[in-house]
Length: 209
Image 1 (cartoon, rainbow, N blue to C red):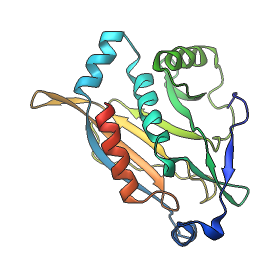
Image 2 (cartoon, rainbow, N blue to C red; image 1 turned 90 degrees about the vertical axis):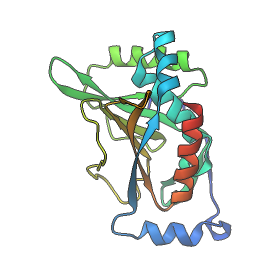
Image 3 (cartoon, rainbow, N blue to C red; image 1 turned 120 degrees about the vertical axis):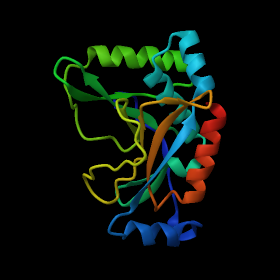
Image 4 (tube, rainbow, N blue to C red; image 1 turned 180 degrees about the horizontal axis):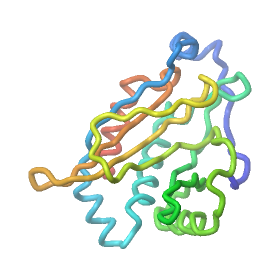
């Protein structure tokens, strides 16, 4: 990331309510799990078209804003400690149509959606490299599969099992019963995020959409 150092607090896990659950899943063979669902984007899509926004960038901003409002999505492992970041930023794939290869673009989160879209477009334009380095700890990872209306999704797993960045993916949207739906995938680390928190996030995201 190119932004300034991201503030965080170190959690005293000896008095932390999630200590037991965190350790159990931290030592699991596969500590991450994935949930796939459909989101109703009827109103969101109308707003995107009305403002002539990039769908992908507007969607990334909306998902990030909602995830940042839920504390469990901002926990990470760092130097063998559990930390809670103030803000999580964004890292997303962007396809080069000529080479048919994607690049990974890192963009700091902003409160204003139009400001975010402008910064992201500039970053996409200016970045020539496909990969600029390892994925930062303080980002949500995003990727799209707009050619496929998927019902299940899985990721390649790289790095240590302590890698706990939530990963969000979406596919080809479609119309059904007069509404527009999009397949959406959420992958999270069970040390920090349970099904309850995923449900809380999905409900909140759907309301915002």
